[in-house]
Image (cartoon, rainbow, N blue to C red; front, side, top):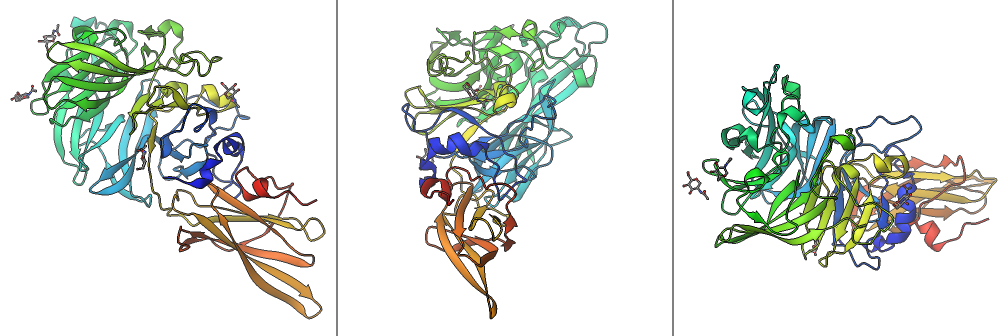
Amino acid sequence: MKRSAFAFSTLLAAVSADATYRSRPDLSPLKLNITIPCGSSHGPCNEGYIFVSPFTTYGEPDDCVSHQAGPYILANTGDLVWSGFGYFAGWTCNLQAARFQGRDVLFSFEGVHNGNHGHGHGHHTLLSQHYDVIKTLRGGGNRISDKHEFIVVDEKSALIQIYHPTQRDLSPYGGKDGQTWIVDAKFQELDIATGKVLFEWSSLDHVSPDESALPLPRGLAGVGRGSSTAWDYFHINSLAKGADGHYLLSARHASTVYKINGTDGSIVWRLGGSNSTFAFGEGVQFGFQHHARFSAEDPDGQLDTISLFDNSVYGSESAGEGNQVRINPYSSGKYIQIDHVAKTATLVRKLEPVSVLGQAPGDAPIVTKSQGSLQSLPGGGDFVNWGSEGQITEYGADGKAVFHAFLGRGWLRERLQNYRAFRYNWTGISPEEPAVFAEGSSLSSDGIVHLFVSWNGDTVTKSWRFSWAEETVSEWGPTTVWKEKVVPRRGFETSTRVVRPAHVQVLSVRAEALDTDGHVLGVSAVASVQQAIAKTVVTAGHEDLRDQTPMS
Ligand SMILES: *[C@@H]1O[C@H](CO)[C@@H](O)[C@H](O)[C@H]1NC(C)=O
Ligand SMILES: *[C@@H]1O[C@H](CO)[C@@H](O)[C@H](O)[C@H]1NC(C)=O
Ligand SMILES: *[C@@H]1O[C@H](CO)[C@@H](O)[C@H](O)[C@H]1NC(C)=O
Ligand SMILES: *[C@@H]1O[C@H](CO)[C@@H](O)[C@H](O)[C@H]1NC(C)=O
């Protein structure tokens, strides 16, 4: 969505992410550190908002205040569009926009997270454009859904993935001394409306534990002595369904992307791993990858292009270098074309860290030990999320970065992680009441009253009509008149100020959200004017800083 208020991108980026919204002191959103702003000399970003759900798995010192972990929709400046904090219980990831039964929806994973073993248990929640819950979807048939995948197929079904510990004789794979537990990585296609299981697949029925890139004796993927430490030999982290009805599956711990027959579950082909169907050309080699998607499918069946995020390194977030397995020196996004006749795989596009491109010379190339995503944007650009490293980059069609940000600042810069990130167009209608706040100094000092308003999740409001009650006390007693002023929307929070004449008190304030035609979309409660505690600091992008100088 185009919004003229966001044209002041660099100004906002520099200041507003540091500010607390005066109208919502209860919200503590993440603060991006934008190192390549949209619209800089490297070119424009695609339209739409940024979708992230950053978290930290580390304990935080008391004096380091983190953001409120949860799903967020942000503007390119880092300014908030929607804080999903409080909309979900527990840990969330994979916030995306999608279409379900002809409607625009949001979805997110919601549950608990086991950071040490890289899995999560819970359900997937679909929200309407009003941020109301349409549906929560759990795994079918006594299975608990894992966090890694939720993708809507044809606006009606969804693919989810399941982490299912089970016991087997693991002695053929080096198991001894009670090492008998292994994770059967499963996936299901579910009918969203009814929750019915349309298809279920089990890795142990089709893929030998021999294909694992993390053999049991090394213990890197679980020691297998109990259901909670089961050997996670396969680890599905993405699923997609092709136009031909077959599935594309990424197994991180086999360093392989599989095509799975949608009728009988057999393996159609393997890209990567110890038994690749395709011979790799220069630069194709990948490992511990995430987020494999069909980028182009050839109806004649000869050429397919797959996009994926190539981590190229394995290591739990807490493990030191000694516990890492590396394929390439740094992570990247890759588009790989596979030729089913020649049985070859060719690298057709590579998205490298900004430092490798020379666009951030001071920073080391990004090595993403876990998580990550690569979204193809309309028009040929890409949106890459550097998972455990808490960074996001947008690339233009020419492969140059047009946007780069760290999801955290200062202490949090090294500690915020984010499973996937996306750019989507989104129209949101807030279910909340617009939040208004007014602050002024007492009669004896300056005569300014600052007014602030915001409306969490709203993307429709174009301007705000502030109204306030002015009380004049004369020898005949007090008289009150309401005055009003329309101010263009500036971003998440819009502010203005009222300069009151001498002997006039501003008593109460209200704000109405207006659409492009001036229709009222929402009305705040009436708020009384608070006594300013300190000199009012307003954020950039607010009317005061841009077109007025403070009165002295
Ligand atoms: C998928 O499995 C069905 C049933 O076994 C078979 O008829 C079909 O040829 C298979 N398709 C592919 C692409 O392997
Ligand atoms: C390698 O893949 C082929 C084709 O899917 C399969 O027939 C064969 O059993 C596999 N070999 C091993 C050692 O897994
Ligand atoms: C933002 O990123 C830049 C470039 O890497 C870094 O020099 C700076 O310290 C970061 N700022 C904060 C507040 O973290
Ligand atoms: C958002 O919509 C605009 C206008 O249709 C389109 O150009 C742009 O590519 C869309 N952005 C995304 C991320 O889909």
